[in-house]
Length: 381
Image: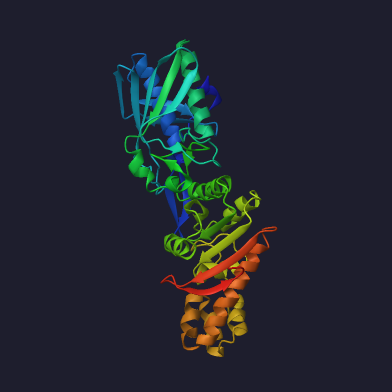
């Protein structure tokens, strides 16, 4: 029995301490779209048998049971349908609050899974699901199959099941996710490797960066551009119109994940990194995590950079005292030659740091200011 083998998650286990904005907060964990779809599928199956469950228990991939509320059930001509409201906990996830629906009907044998309205369809190679298939990832597929097989066995059902997962508002929600850039069109993905969503873990963003690299490589792109945010994304598309949209990747702060994915795809032979001075200073110092709360930087490194650029003692003193690139650039505003050399040396130091982590890959770095103007470059054009 699942109840004996897989303990039920307690309310306390659904809370964890997370550092957000420099402060420790107790935040609630959520459930993945895969867990929500699995619960809806079990509820729809039981509705097909004449029940109307208001909650069901499912086994998550981490080996624990979760009790999940069912929002609605009904029977129709093609089977039974159930809805679960996707609860992302305190994570700022685009799918939080989405209605995840599953319709279950009879078929001859086995368990046949399909994607309906609002579930994206894969159109490019390089993802875990091949082109043409609904974007229901491997772990949720196994979750759904296991849960329904367990339910069939428990109720003594031998007939096959036709299962369709759908998300009525999925197409709109998907516009706020990475799906369009990954070539997943028409809706959201049904995801989740553990069944749980950790608040502010950013795991889904990191995974989307890795997937974007794989999609670019599978699409035959030998050159990719890595950018740190929305503004730099627009600049990269303006500077390098020859790059296909799939080859321009918004990595956020996940430089290490992006470089690791590139290293695993040897067909990528050229990398362009574009960012603003503060982020690239972290790269130049060897950082692989570039968020505002990671790797604040070394004032000694910054002061040495000012000195090498020929900056004044006053500008160097600012580097020691403040430790921020922004403050240094303000101090160098009256020293245009030193400021220009600072940008050039910053670009080269960042380029060397990235190139050291990639074998036989050409690397260039472009530094831009807040207006998107190029202020420093290093590496091949």
